[in-house]
Length: 198
Image (cartoon, rainbow, N blue to C red; front, side, top):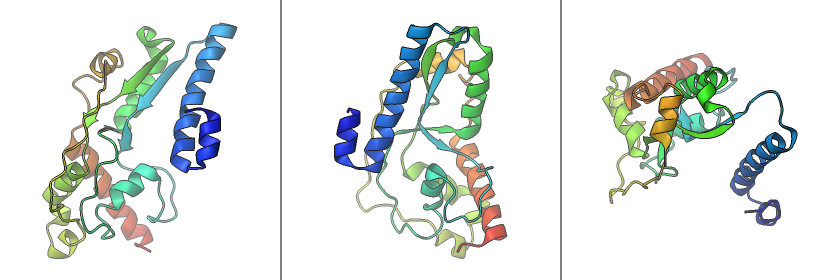
């Protein structure tokens, strides 16, 4: 889609996607035109989940992906929602990839898909159900129930993501779903204690 398409659509998600694509085109145009003395690496992560560490004033609005995750255990979502995107990465693994992109010659002037663990909306809910923090009836009641018709999760073609992960030192080291969603849930529950749920 073009910038004009995004303006015509007047939709935040379309504008976001077009802005990302235009930024990517712009940096490669700059590199090919100006031949700077530095290199560039573009990292394209999937959905980003993990424990939030940014300053917040309320659990009502943390950031997009954290808000999506929190909606799965704050009692606001009665049924596990359809999956919006079929892949995710832990924010800490993405941070490792950013550091590696600054120090690894093999990734100079390249773009990479990062992470690539399969994702469905049921995955974090399954992890939450297994956590001791959600074993009480009160906490278990906050979790959404499974949909009546099981979802067939979307298949995402991640291309050469495994070789890219290997170049960035991530292959075989990505955090598990239990680590990503368990650590994130525990941190958000701490924030609930600090700020309340309102």
